[in-house]
Image (tube, rainbow, N blue to C red):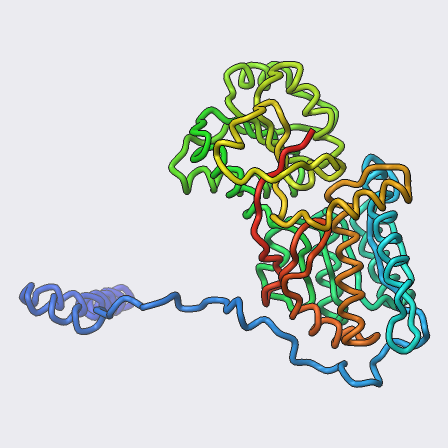
Length: 411
């Protein structure tokens, strides 16, 4: 009984102690409001608590001294591209364009009697194969810089290695996230997915006043990211959301796609070039006159770019043409196209032009920096208004090509 009594007394004291804070709520309402105002009221922040300064991306580390210069008279440039599998043709085009650019650059001697040499590695296969090839190029081949294909995963792998070791990376990938974390070693040659999506949306929803749009996106990372950017661009313009259809390579969703395409006013394709080729042919069978908009990777192998669409009236003509996003300046394209065709007996695409430009940008920068990775990075960061075959190249501090993007008609 005594134990029970002591327990009861303890419980009474505990209840009394816990109930004491509740007395605050017995205070007058006006006093409670005053206390809350004094304790919690703050002026809204003028800007976010934390933000990334896009103009503050720089490299402040070591490696610029002569002791870090790469040895030998050969300056090696690495190219990571698909050399096997369904994207083999793309890899071959990138190799040819890069070799052509190196031949042209070696015709004019580099300082110190150096000459450029291309080192190729295959990104085809599983994830670990691409990462291993990147490491081989950086450490075994001692490349001064690395060029990657349009494949986003390879770009991210190269960017991680480049940032840790200190190697400039020039990528053909349009993946916006490669430069969003502000690493100072990566530079994008072409427009981002965001830039392409916005120029498509302006043309479709504002210039042409179309509403029923079908978005065919590949079932991979590049297709998902690009598709998301186009949906976002449509939302920003208060336009009807596009009908999204996920496409697997070689498998056209006949029933779903056929029904949606029957009333579509425009079709946007966000896939790789191989998938886009057969997908475009199938869409043409169902809707011969519907305008088709190809993202940059989908137009990888297409070389028939014409005069840019510079006004709404122009874009309304020949609605059955393929349309792709590209930088505005096309002045160097003709010379590159003719030389490439004479040299290899084939027609270059947008990717080949960007690979050609990547080598030329690196060569121009090496003439200032010499065979030193850190100094080369500094020089690349200052590239502005470089006239390339795929358009003007101007890098911002985050490594994005800020050249304006327009539309071009294709075949």
